[in-house]
Image 1 (tube, one colour):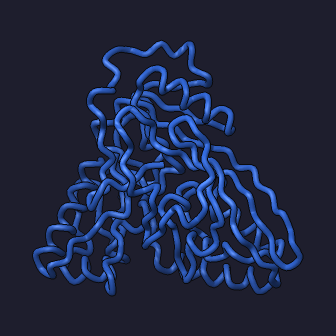
Image 2 (image 1 turned 45 degrees about the vertical axis):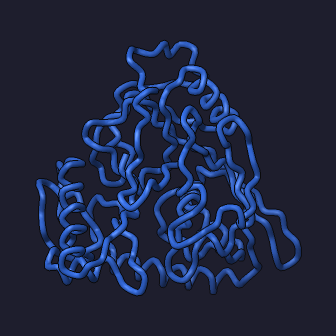
Length: 321
């Protein structure tokens, strides 16, 4: 998954590993598309193209693709469902790969259970299925965009819950080795983890979460579904319509990024086809035809004005590739 390389959350490119000529894709272990518009794969519906693009539907395909990429010295980034990603208009010169595996199972132990789930499974849909079965633990994820892998990497959370408090372990592909990381090794913080913060060594591949295990407890399905309905209603009330990535910035300690941006007088400010939402100032919405540059201009404006007016340095929650 994309990781956090500091306050700007920009994924840097290793210039020495860029492909200088057209790759021979005939040896690839699964179909690879060329010049794929990433606006098709991000919730902002904006951004440049990936020189190469692939979707691994199984664990075996993901491992085979990683090995092929390593043999060809091709720059690689693993992404999830694109709900927290902006690809610059210049595009990405390597391979953007998505891990789609979604199988899951529950091992019951009386009133508790362990959920084992592959990283491509959607968080919100999984939470609803579990609640309907009477299993509590992920109901806070109602309406949460993105997949399990992204939630594990970014310690996704909302409405009183987060990944760190229910995760038991994650299965992680580190270069060419599959490792089991207990939750303690992930060193979780607010929207942060060891996977997100650790730099990738030169010549190594970025890590990929393959699967995760979560702790569940038995509960009343009716109560769980009622709780999720309240969360869904609250989310709908607060969420601006249109194409966006959700919260652009992390909340500073003891404050709200949306409140600071609103106090800075930036609600409704536009750049090209992008607008800082008049409903929630921590959302930037693509009103139609926005470029990544339009969105980045509003990101820079919000950061600079909040810093100038209040002395607070906002940190991006989204990834910029």
